[in-house]
Length: 202
Image (tube, rainbow, N blue to C red):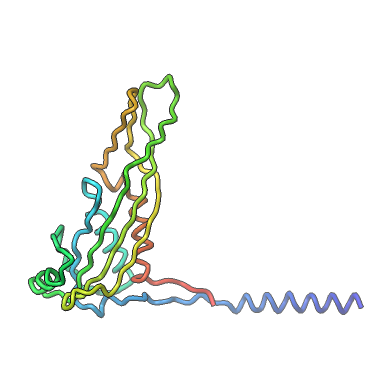
């Protein structure tokens, strides 16, 4: 009886191993094919933070979104002012021969410095927490309608925070890549997922 049980157990293990061996990784194409939209305009993302953070987020998003898309024609429109009125999108689209326009907004919270330093220290440098949300949408020029949108939020530590003996602190974001690079990359990776190749085990 024990020998039969052992054989049955061995058969189950072998069957499980065989089943696992049959699982394969498949390439899943991007959910949104940007080539279908012909010429795409990209307006520099609006940012609630001073400095060049909007420009950084726009560049990172554009690079990652088109990475798996092959040849995609994109016109960089810079920090163009555009309202929610559909006519404004038609005007910009007509000027540049665009079918669609990508817009985005990066909202960054005030930094939350960690003030727990030794009483003997008169000054020092430390990191701080910051929350951010990136929202991006693809607008159809002809109708002004949003045909795709996605947003993501994240919290990260940022550098270049200085605290002084009086309890005041300053945050220097003149170098947005150094200060916010990891945070922006995290948001961009999440928001651009529909434009990228993914892998799935079956």
